[in-house]
Image 1 (cartoon, rainbow, N blue to C red):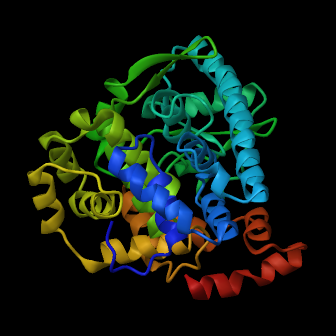
Image 2: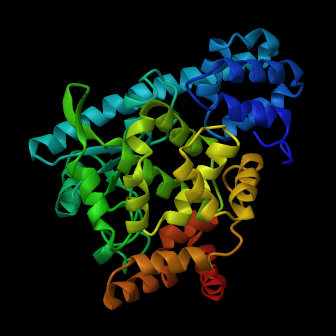
Image 3: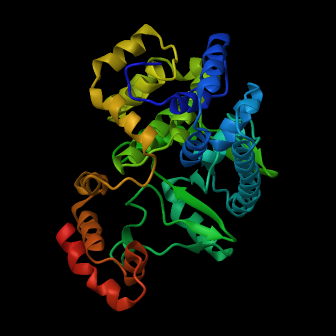
Length: 384
C-alpha cells in the first residue's frame, strides 16, 4: 500500500479487511495495524458507511482480531452482520417469488450485483450487504416482466414525469423500482449504455444457470460481469458517491476468478464499451492500495491512462462515502441525455426533467404541501 497518501491507520486496516483471502505477509501487516488502531468507533463508522461492516466483522473474527476491539464496537459489528444475514435471506426468498412469476412466462432472468455476488462469490453467508435486488431481462421482455410483477402485487415507484412514461425503457439505468412487502427489485435491460447492446447481449447470453429458492435463475459470466461492475462503480462516482463495497466486489472477483477475468479480452471489451480509461482508473487502487498483482501488460495499460485524480478521487470517497453534494449536475444530465436515443426521445427526456410530477417534487425537495412543491419549480428551472 502507498505510504505517501493521507490515509489513517483505521482506513488502511479497513481496506485490508475488504477481501476474502489473506496471505501470510498481509496477515502480519494487518496484525500490526490492528494493534496500533485506537479509534475503533471511527473504524466502525467507516465500515458501516461503506457497506462492508458484515464482511469486516467476519474477517476480524477469522484473523483473531476481536480481542483487540472494545466490546461495544464488536457488538455493533456483529449486529450489522446479523442484519445482513437476515436481509439477504429475505431478499433471496422474495426473489424466488419474482422468479416463479417470470419463469411461468419463460422470461430469462439474470441476477446482477449484490445477490449474484452473494450467491456465487461471497459464499452465501451474509457477507455482501445489499438493499434491493437488480436483475437483467431482455429488452423485448422488460415491459412484459414489469407488467407481470405489477399484476402480482408489486407496486412501482412513480415515474418522474408524464413525459417520461412513453420512454421509461429508454432512460436511466433501470425501470422504476418495483416494491412488495418491503422487497425492492429493479429491472434492467441495458448495462453498458446506448450503442453498447452487444456487450449486454453477451452477458445475457453467456450467463450461467443457478437455482434460487427452487427456481431457475442465471448469473453472469465473470469477465463481462467484472466490466459491468466497473461501469456501475463509475456511475456512482459520477454522482459523487461511492463505497468500498463496490471496490470490494472487484477485489473478491479477482481473488476467485482472476485467470478468467485478467486476459486480453477484458481490454478488448472495455474498448468496445468506451471504458478503457474508466477501467484503468478503477484497477489502479486495486494494484496500489490493495496490493493485487497484475500481469505486466495490465500494469502498462493502467500506466498508459495514469492521472492523479484516479487515486485522489478514491481517497476522497474513502474518507467521504455516499451522499456528497454533487459538484455540478451538468455532467450527469449530459451523460443521461447522450444515452437517450433519437431526437424525439431526447426531447421527452428534457421535458420530463423540466416538468416533473408534483409527487416527485414533494419527495425530491421534502415538501409538505403542494404549494411548497410548486414554488420549487422556478429554482429548478434556473438550476437546469
